[in-house]
Image (cartoon, rainbow, N blue to C red):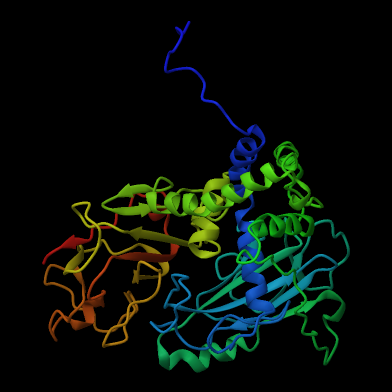
Amino acid sequence: MASAGSSSAPQAVSDWRREYAYTLGEQAFVYGFPYIYNARLRHGWVAEEADPKMAMHSAVDHFWHARTLFDASDREGLAPNNDTLYSCAWVDLSTEPVILSHPEMGDRYFTFELVAITSDNYDYVGRRATGPHAGDFALVGPGWEGELPAGVRRTATAPSPWILVAGRTLIDGEHDLPAVHALQDQYRLTPLHLFGKPGAIVPERRDVLVPADPSRDPLAPWKTLNAMLAENPPPERHEILLRQFAEIGVGAGLDVQEQPESVQQGLIAAAAAGLPMLQEQLLSGDWAKLINGWRYPPPEMGHFGDDFVKRAAEQALFGIAANDLEETVYLVAFDDAEGEKLSTGRYEIRFGAGSLPPVDAFWSLTVYDEARNLIPNPIDRYSVGDRTRGLVTEPDGSLTLHLQPDSPGSDRENNWLPTPQEGIWFVALRMYLPRPEVIDARWQCPPVARVG
C-alpha cells in the first residue's frame, strides 16, 4: 500500500468530462482523420474555383488530367512524381455503378488506383491488375446488386459510396506529352444509366459536402467528421468503437454543438493536438523498416485498415493515398549513411554492378524539400532513373548518382539530381511493379552517402 503523502497518489482532475472528451477525442480524431482530410480535398477539387491547368479541378464523375509534368512551380506539398501524368476523379457510387473505360494501352505502364474514403485501396484497374487491352470496368458501391451490360467487368465492391480514382500514365519526357494526352482523352467515367447511349453527356455536378471552416469554428473538424460518417457509413465491425465516440457527440447524425461546454472544450483540444501527433508519427519512421537509412514500407501499405494511426498518417496525411506494394514500392530517406539529416552538401548513391532496383516497369529517384515540393534547379531536372538518357556507368558496371546543389561536372551531369542550396530535404525512390525481393526487403538500396 502507498503511504500517506506518497507521490503515487492520483492526480486531481478538475473536470472529468473534459478530460474524457479529450482522451477519447484524440482516438476519434485519428480514426476520422481520412474522412476530414478527404472532405476538404474533395470540396477543393470539385467545388472551389481553380485553374484546371494548374491544379486538380473537375466535376464529380469526371476526370481531371494533368497535362504537363510537375515542376518546382507546383507548391501544394503533395510529393508528386515526375514519371507519370495523373488522371484523378471523385466518383459517387451511392445510387449506381460508374463505368471506367480506357483504350488499348500497348506496353505503356498505367494504373487506376481505386481508393475508399478512408484512404485504403480496395482494387485496381491497370497493366498489372487487368491487362493492357481496352476495357470497361464497373465501379460498384456498397449494396448494389443489379446487372451489368455485356462486356463490362466488375471490380471489387467499394467499401464507401464515395471513392477517389487515382490514375497514372507513364510519360517519357516532354516529347511524349502528345501521345499521353491522346490516351487520357479516351479515359471515361460513365454512370451506368448513360453507358452505351450514343452521344450521352455526363452532367457536371459540383454539389459535394461543404466541410466546416476551422478558421471560424473550433469544432469544425468534428462537424465535418459527423457529416462524412453519415455520408460514408463505417463498417459494422467498428460498431463498438463508434458507440464510444457517440458518448462525446462524434458519429453520424450527432451534433457536437449539443454537448456540454466541457466536452466541447475537450474535443477542441483533441483536434488541436491530433494533427501534430500524426505529423510526428509520420516523421518518426516507426511504421517502417529502416535499412541503410531507407524506410521500407510494411506489407499493409495501401490498406492499413484497422490500424488507424498508420491509416491516417502514412496514407492520408503523407500523400492522400498510397499504392499497394505489388503496384509500387516507395522508399524514403531523410538521413544519410551516418544517420544525419540530409541538408546542404554533396551526396552520392552508388549502385553496384547488377544491383539496380529490380522492377518489371521502371524506377526513379526524386528529391523534395521539407514541404514535400520539388526543388527549383537550373536544369529543370526533378528525377533520375532507368529512363534517364545518358547515365554514365563506371568501368566496373556500377552507377553513381550525384545529389548536390551544383553540377558535378559536364561529364557527370546526366547522373546529377539537384538538391536545395540550403535547408533540409529528403529523397524518394519509386519502383513500379517491383519484384518480390523489393517487397520483402531482400534487395537493399545503398545508403545516401555524404561526400562533401
